[in-house]
Image: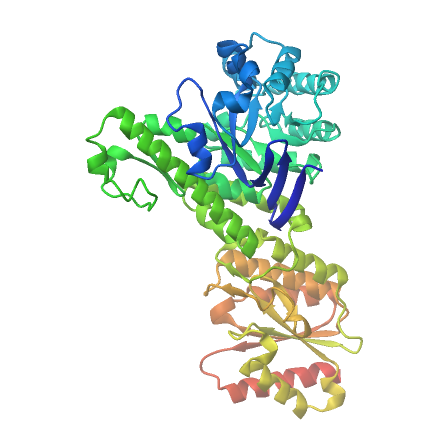
Length: 542
């Protein structure tokens, strides 16, 4: 295998990809190199900024430079001693409709210039195409992919098999399955550029996840044309390992300044929010006095710093098990990114399958988007599919979560244990205590130290969607577990009536006894305990 995963969180990975020129670490951005117009020297990309690999276009090299890259070798031609990747001219097909060379010629050229990672000449689907047109691009890409293995002659290069289909997700699924069955080293999601240009990140998220489900999980996934730091986190979270883009240079020529939260125009800025070497040496006002070429170089270099810095933040978040929080923060920088995060709930079981069940730290739950977190899905599935209450448990006592965690060590639970001692051991041993807790649902007290039930922080007051989710989990738990009665102590000020109503409806449907004790500020703790004791004794004596 050429790819080894070292750390993972969600579908994001820190990995090692072995090439003939050395091992590179993912997630990784390949800056696009245009030998004709290059604001930052290729070797400077590695030595100064830390980019381990670059990408260039084999079709353009062949058309403009013919045999020179063959004679010198690609690395020497580009003046770059790291890993290199070549695209095949598919983007030119998307823009112009066709290219002058066929796949056999492109494959032979890529092999002859000695690139480390090469791409077959696929047919991109594009954005504004009918399904019938998309089917043609998928079928032709599949045909070329199969043909490719009879064309290649070198064994020391890694080859990319693109997945096509565009916004037609059933075609993306078919393409991913077909491409995944072939022995490519890397896969790429084709045709995302126009999707991103139209700010349809919700569609892009569905495309990425659909492709990810079809290709072998152990192979890296490349996202063509994705070069803005604001979207790296969501893309990595969904399983993209590699990116490439010329945006750092294109934006610079347009006077656009990249940040992890969006893009600003230099003429509209009074301050640089970045502390990269460039931004600490100039101000927007002083930069505007320089020549257009100097401004372009300055902005291209800053944009590269912004990209590499964000990738490092993502890697640290993966290592810390906090990629979701970083992704959520980035998603709130633009409504289109937030729409992509919301699509994750359609695939939460897939994310849960590959997300580590134990992490180095707890997590923060901010809002309903977090209900799609794999940790929450993992707990829900395990509780309903694998958990059984104690054999002698006949009555369920449902209590609201306490501020202190773990719940069983809280002062409130100490009072509940004192209450149980007063009703006699015969009754007490039949009572099973569970807590309803945001964002997990029902937490049996004996499980509350299992990760991450006590290793999380939740904002109060709870929002409506979170409370409704807890109510749904309450209903599912009561219906499935073998209790004869349910008693609930509820704090309406914090939870309103959703939990009580859900528990009551579940008991009615199941045909078991139900009793609700509602806490209110006029009632003393002593009176509340007295009412709770009476309710428990009433249920256990029937």
